[in-house]
Amino acid sequence: MSDSDSTEDFDQFADRMRDLSGDEGADETPSDDGEDGEVALAFGGGSETRGLQTTATGEPLGHVTASEGLTVRRGDHEIIGYIRSDTRDELRLGDYIQIPYPSREDDPHAELLTAVIEIGYEQRADIDDKSDIRRGIDGETIDERQYVQAAELDPIAIVEGSDEDDLERSTVDRVPKPFTQIYDATGEAFLQTGLNLPDNGPFVGHLAVGGERHPPDSPLAFQLPDGTGSASTPAIYTHTLVTGSTDAGKTHFTKNLLRQLASDQTYEISVGDDGTEDRLLGMVVVDPEAEYSGLGDDPDPGDLPDDVRRELEAEGIEVGGINTGACGSHDLRTFAPVVDGKPTPDIDGVREFGIPFELVASHPELVMPFEAEGPTRAALRDCINAYFGDAAAPTYDGFIDYLDDNEDDLCDDHDIGDNMWRAVNRRVDKDYFSAVFDSGTHQLTEISNELFQPGRVTIVPVNHLGDPEDMEMRLVVMALLTYIVENKLSNDDPDESVADTPLLLGLDEAHEFLGDTSTVQTRSIVQSFRRIAKRGRKYNLGLALVTQEPGDIDDQIRSQLRTSIYLQLEQETADDLPIPGRFAAEDLATFSQGQAVIKAPNVRPVEICGLDHPVVRHD
Image (cartoon, rainbow, N blue to C red; front, side, top):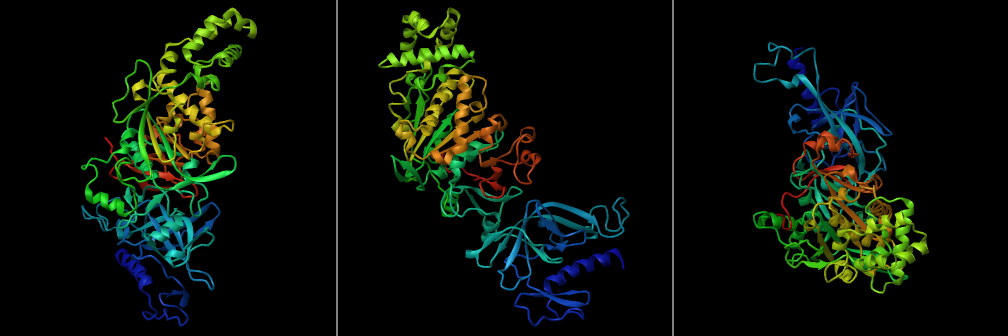
């Protein structure tokens, strides 16, 4: 038999496996006890009936082969699919494949959901392709049917049931049969069950394979668990990381995600001594580049055509600026911190607030930006405690005057020597402290009920304060973050506006503020965030950290970010990250804008595509 004949026979056999009805040959006989859709398979001259119904709607791509082994085991499987020559061009790495199991008495219909993790060619016959005189090579085309294409399939879960409304997911505990046909998995209910995707919650993106939305005709929405249904804890309280290189689309992606969170979904929170209430989510976004105030406005018509807008709305995706009437649950306001000598950003409706020195009473580390020896820190704390014990209306300038006026008494009362006294004064007498503390007409503590409240999206731009390395910006951001975190953590008369609001704290350029532990000041905020990261659900506070340098975020904080969204990243950055699932650093390096890998709580890591269009203003 020629190579060409053997090739044709092999593919014809695959066709017959699909169409077999029991009357085409001596070795194939009908089965009297088979149900409609069952196939009688011939093995060794006899017939064997197996229930091979499938919920897949497409034509088979090939079949399971056992020629080199076929096993499932704990943590390691070997399932190989032979791919028909006429379907090879359709197969992509990452494709979802379903494989029906034979029916079992008294058991529901079951199919195996797998993902393609390797595709390759193998020689079928004694041929090679190292010369242009070989059969099938005419200078331009190759008869690839002389090769076998095999795909390694990674089992994900068994999906049981045939009713879309009553599917169940179970662990892979049985092996599919050799010669069972394999199909492209495109059923929404089948995929949603097999991947354990929640069927409600804020929209993040669409399920994707190779940068293309999947299923192609009706892409499946990836939604964050919101605490309803089987998800006991809202995903926002288990914290989120959005990371990507410059121009990867992370701000676009994050804005669209935050807009989805501005919905009428409520979250239970403890209020008072014993009661609870369901309240809307409040959000605070620290914005180093003044980009997020656009959440309040509609996108430009050129950025979101009317037909696309209607399609997104029909899919249940929140579209339109928070302050435009498109959002009936939330409102957005921009609050800019005031620092002497720094202009207030030119943003419509901006409201100013200052950082009061009174915060230093409970957070003396705010005036310890540089490392100091233990005795010097103790002396400084003694002076701060003495001042706040005496001052009726504490201010930074009042504190400096207090040190000047009470040097002798303070040194005597707290055993402070001359050298240590000079060290204390060097650390607290700084121009940036004077510029930051008590500036403006409205202090944070006076208008906290405006910044923090259910249904309020608070944007805090800080780009007007300089670079993140500048002490003015660093001090303002540290003071604000400290105020939020400590009032969430405290049981001792906290600010009710913070404590009684379900809160999402968004922090762009997060690595600038949550990585450095070289000073008392920065170490204190990192330690507070470690506590929040570990116990966010208890305190009704979620973190949404956005960064292009995820490796610079404190390891203990990063390890608690249960929802991780990896957009395009340079390979040297991605190499140091725990990329989830079977995705690799080199995969992320080739992603296009909006293409991402996501790992959410209790959901298998998958590829998604964010929206191509902004649903709010994005300059």
